[in-house]
Amino acid sequence: MLGSLLLALSTTLFSQAAPGQRVSPLVPAEHFAPITVPFEYFNRHIFIDLTLNGKTGMVFMLDSGTNCNILSMRTSEALGLMPVSIQQKKGLGLGSGKVKIAAAKDIDASIGGIQVANLMAIVDLEALEHHFGHHIDGILGFPFLRNFVVVLDFDKHVLTLLPSKRYAYRGPGDTLSISSKSKSTCIHVMLGLAGHKQHQAKLEIDTGSDVTLLLYSHYVHGARLEGIFPTQPPHVSYGLGGYFTMQLGVLYSLSMGRTEASNLSIFQLKIDSAMTQKGFDGLIGTALLDRFQKVVFDVPRGHVMFELKPADQISANQPAVPPRQ
Image (tube, rainbow, N blue to C red; front, side, top):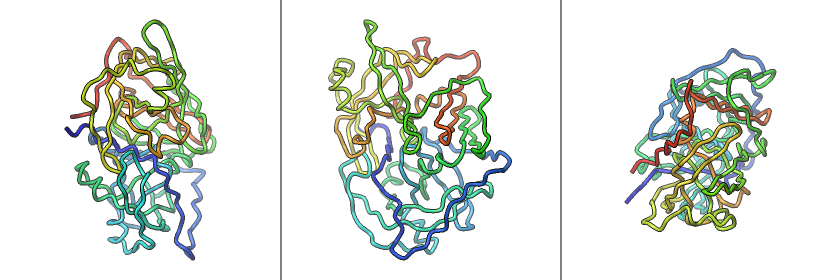
């Protein structure tokens, strides 16, 4: 049975341009009025419209777990940017299959007139589109977050873009430090077990994943957490590299700064892939993020802020919703 369409596009791609290609430098604007655009929240994934080389209405997924910006091979051809040096590679997602990739292209991508990307890896996303059931022209990854302050309002389904210079957060949310602000949106959390046992974990905030929390096998075995994942048929999911399996379990508590979630439905990744070699213990997905009113990524200063909904708690013994079946 096909479970959640977990993208988990934490790839090992590098945005290398074709030989001889000159790439216009991305110079993030230091001063501009806040730009707010709607996003489509489809199956717990965030889609926004971009303008590419002057063409509007290009649909991009926001995936903070991807280490580069990606342009669909089909869209690249439609824009007259013929891909070169096409190769098939493994290790570009959680699945074990091969994916077609090509040399990156110089792209002028903008939101509200502000350039947000200038170089995109060319990747064949056709199979991913087919399984996901949504048009995808490309993916905005971590490099986008590295240059701006990005606010996700899950109540109103809008994204706000702000210049990072002189930004100061003054909201009511909980501020957590990013452990490696130049490479990922990774935070430290505490996992609580029955009997008051606790384990620290280093988790990536991944807007490209629709789970609450996914733990990698090497961490589960190292921390001896196998007991929270009872033996039952695994969930089969689909990522950029194809199908993979996850085991469902229940976590007693998850502490993120001053915020605590309890009785969470979580998953264990049953295989270790290239994605799990990045030094993280797992990831936090949108099934947990969307229980906040807002999530603010201030990667330039190394912070992420979580704002709870008014008079709401994530705990109260409410299990988080597992991925759609």
